[in-house]
Amino acid sequence: MTSNAFLLAALIVATSAWSADKSGAHHDHAAHSHGQGQLELVVQGDVVQLDFEIPMESLLGHEHLPKTPAQKKAMAELQVGAAQANYLVVLPAAAACQLQSAQARSDMFLGKKSEHSDLDVQLQFKCSKPAALQQIELAVFKRHPLLKSLKVDMITPKGQGSTTLKPKDPVIRW
Ligand SMILES: [Zn+2]
Image (cartoon, rainbow, N blue to C red; front, side, top):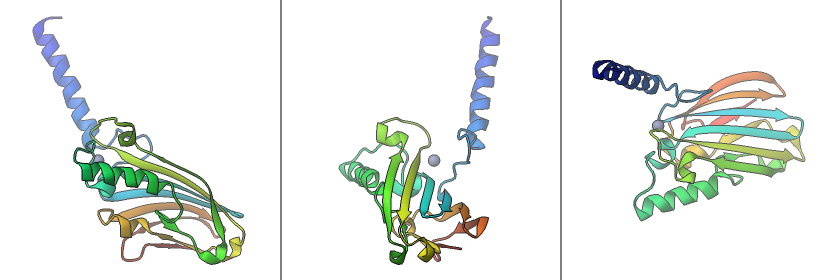
């Protein structure tokens, strides 16, 4: 390869990497936009499943690996908190729901450095009085004010739907 051809190839690679990043195409199923999270909710019988994808920027204020002791503490608290009932969501007490399984993952928890990072959380609840389950409050907005909206796709006993939640009314109703 001549040096000109090499430079041209390097330029093409750099340009396509740039456009892929600008379009947010580095995520398989969703665009990554700061301030905007996504939730897939399935309520079926007595089981509630929630699948969150939230930019780490909206939870920590940064997507670089934590540097200061305060940043390290905040990320550790997020990692522990996100996998607990009532951190991201509050289900109605009358529905008597128990957290059955929880997983919170992020590249940043693994110490992986990348330009953008998400928090992915899967929660599953089982409710002994599912008839009382007609709404879910998103507690995440109060804990993380940098999160400005959450796009929700849901399947509930009322059918399929989608909505976008904002901090001023952070409740999914069906
Ligand atoms: Zn980002």
